[in-house]
Structure formats: C-alpha cells, structure tokens
Length: 207
Ligand code: MN
Image (tube, rainbow, N blue to C red; front, side):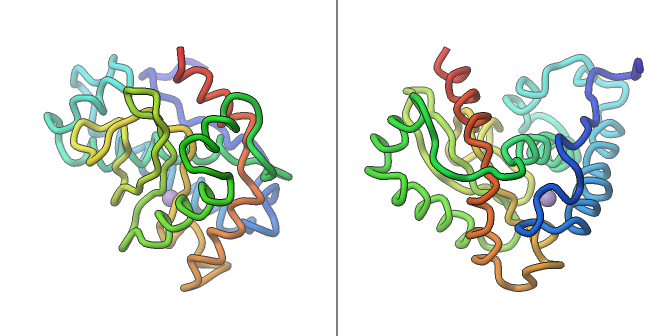
C-alpha cells in the first residue's frame, strides 16, 4: 500500500505472545499498538509539510537540535521502538557470534562483564529511557543510556554512535508483569536478544 510519506509503521516481527513468558502478550499489545503507534502518528504530524518528510531519519537525528521537541520525542519514540522490536525474538538469547563476539570480549573483557554493564545502564537510568550498545566513530563499542526518547544518533546525545542493541526501560515496557521490579525485566531481556540481528547491525556499521 502506498502511503503519503516515506516513514512506515512496520509490523511487529512476531506475534504478541511470541516473547512469553519474558514479555507478556498484553504488555506487547499495548506497547506496540498504543505507545509505539502514538509516537509514530505524532512524529508524522510533527514533520508534516516540512523538509523532514523526505529526509532519512538518521539525517533528522543528526540535526535534531534544530527541530521542534515534538520531532525529537516522537521521532525518537518511533525509531527506538522499531529498533527494540527487531533486536528481540522468540527463543533468543545465548551468546553473540562472529566478529561481534570478539568485539564484545575485546571491549568489555568478557560477555558476562558486558551483560553486567549493559544491565547496570538500564537499572541506573533514572526515570524513563533506554540502555544502548553502540559503536563510536573510531569503531569502539560502548554502553550508555539515554533519557526519554533520545538515542545515540542525535546530535545532542552525550555520547554519539551507531546503535547495535537497545533495551527499553520505560515503565510501560515492563510494569504490567514486573511492576516496580525493573531488574527482573532486565534479567528476562537476555532470553530475548536476537544476536543474529545485532551481529548484522555490527557488520553494517563496520562498512
Ligand atoms: Mn517503550
């Protein structure tokens, strides 16, 4: 179907119950169908009639400080969620493979240490936000977190890079099942990571 703009609200890459028991069906239905959809709709409304309608989203993020806050918040919300869905799958988890595996060990000394640092980034993000694994412009991997709907592609990010893996730590991502126990949701997240997808993102980032 042809849409008016170049930005699509992509289908969820799996069924709503596919990530059970780690992320429950109702959470995924509301998170994708209501939260993500609202960011998308509000993003489309915010760029309507502007030059941004024909720009790549990465180029919008590179200049995000020049655009209205509605674009930052909703464009971030639109992009970050798609990136989060695609970075998970049913029966995910396990260990990273290929070049990515070596890069993680080199950057963080071990996979367990990487997991700890990434988990801590999620646990210590005050309020709402995201934990990220990214590659900087020197090709080095780093972990950090961003507030609200910001991401490492934005010119105003504290540390900029190419995102490889993301975990949503907004309460709407886990509250129905885990309530105030964000660390339990974070522990469960490791059973869902789509390492093939993350490895592919890393290979692309290296080019
Ligand atoms: Mn979310």
